[in-house]
Image (tube, helix red, strand yellow):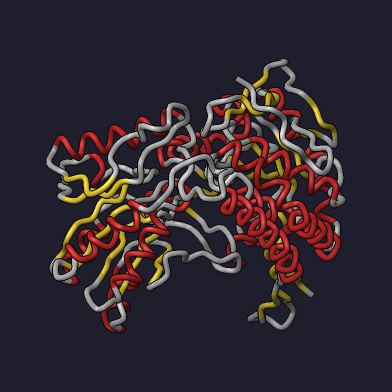
Length: 487
């Protein structure tokens, strides 16, 4: 079925954008975007291939000389204009995001506002790409260090934050003077198209930003083999990240990778358990657990393990599952049937191997349509269970007791991932020992939302390379050039 068109204040192009033109796919193919809460088709958009990606790269190459030559103040003014437009249209764009990815309306609106913050921050930070002069060992030499844009950038982004992931990559790249070809997830292309509409309306010149939507394998292959593409910024699975690293050897293409995560939470007995339970549930079930930094493994000190479980049980039982457009909804659907089935399989495997369901554990019986799964809490987790090793990316909360600081740290670090970790304690010595010993790129101490536009974001081990956001996120789109002048 197809949902009725939703109202928009201004005309919105839902097409690819290449060389300053809104276009359909060169092969004529299309893709039906579905609402995961209803399974209905909400839009039909172009679905291209390598030909479209190649045309977009060529357009970005042609636009690069003039865009990179613009003063950062001019580039920044366009980004700030776009940020203000996003804030004005957040209420219009929020339902679009909710319909295509399922998250509650309040979360969608918040994402658009955060995306505006990213564009504005990088617009200002682009003015502070400072070089330096290095004192030479010789009186007749001058040594200068410059930072210049990398060139044409390709971005491949995930569906779970379909605007914010783009804003942080596009904002940084454009502020640095790079030109961009963006390939969003085919599951959530409408938010990317909405963001592109705004950036074009804000004054971005033709070819500076190009948007393609289509086959991930052929488009990704084009980005890797085409020497026009100097760098790829990717957000997605570790499996695909490995493939990109292999393919990048063709042209020594630079990569920024934000990959999988399996975030541990360490709850020590000195904290207020009511506060700890509320923070844990709010963070775990944000966007239905479909967050790269979502807490996945809860390790709770044995002295308070049962009390913590009781409080979590009551909080999770009160969560309302439903369509994200319903203002009372706390949890929307998972993004696809495949994602729901994976979460269900992980839960079934855990229970079959001895885990206990504290609350939830199955599809909600009252939801005949949509990719829903009940918010679930499990205990009795063993190392042989898939859920102990694999990234869940869904509304399942395993809770495991621990007895000592040493055991907690060992359990937390026992993973190939290293994106985010969380510590709940009011003991200074414990907190220092934890944040210094945890092998993760992001550590939240009594903070279950440890991300900020102005701070670096990224992982260690197999959770990725390089950092997004902050000054680090801008500099990854810049080359460092040394100039030595002999007098």
